[in-house]
Length: 269
Image (tube, rainbow, N blue to C red):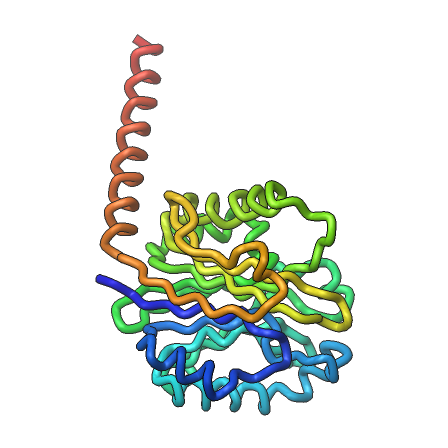
């Protein structure tokens, strides 16, 4: 089964242009993923003000999903529940809100600014594809990849913002991508789609290193010279390949367990 993904490396606070929407629509994507805090422009000064625009932002995402006739992984907006703020990703399929995920591992700056950690993972079956959602700092928690693997997730979507590092080397960038995203894909036996924002978040510059990863390496990525620019990645993933990989890993795990049991029994004879 082939799945068409469009990863939109957008400038925060800027809606897609008509030309960009037409380009995406022509791809006939099964899923379109937007970056973390996609709707937060320079006029939004903090998370509390962002929460006041919650309904406006969600309605925008609903319309976009309907216009593109696809399932939108809606980046993130700030939700309010019982006076708590959450960094929330909505999944909207052809104009219908399916579910939402609250970021479980907000970074220290978010916590200090009022973002509350969520408590639950989110796995959904959309049109025969099992997807999972993680947001930015969630990738620093290996257990969340383990949960995705146990749930048999085909594709993990990761809306993200990455701070601009002017002294970052290409080798350092590649190292972090391997450590958190390729290794995460290996750990979960899933494809992984990281979608970054560019521009600024609360006055702090960002860099976009959007990519698609598999357990066997990077499938597609935004190159270094595009890290400060809007980019649209169109990616086709073969779910049969990830299912075969998962089956091989399961078989290998069972064989390893049997070997350990055999060694243990031999040592007691």
